[in-house]
Length: 112
Image 1 (cartoon, rainbow, N blue to C red):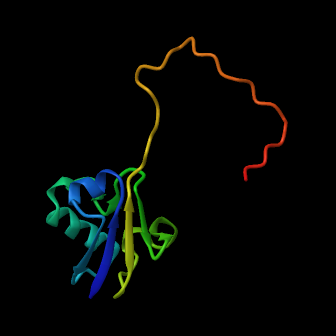
Image 2 (image 1 turned 90 degrees about the vertical axis):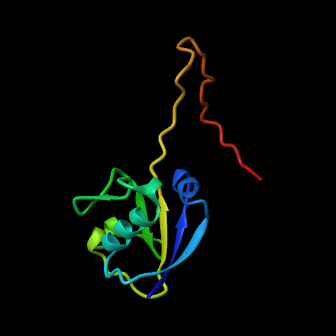
């Protein structure tokens, strides 16, 4: 079967492409993720481990998060669009602890 895999953030950097068409014999998303780790060494250990998704990555099947379906056991079907998005955590290593923030008022603001 053929599926389209779309990569975001650091996953895109590791694969070197925004999107790839993959012909696969994988039956489940877990199988596909293991295959992607084999094809792209930079993804190794970052998608699936011991049959579970690694960390808080978002893997979607046609825009539905597989965590809300059957997880890695979700069946892969021909023509699926698979999106792989890593968790993104923000913050600043060198934040100024004395930084002053502006107060938030209850005033309504319309953005046009």
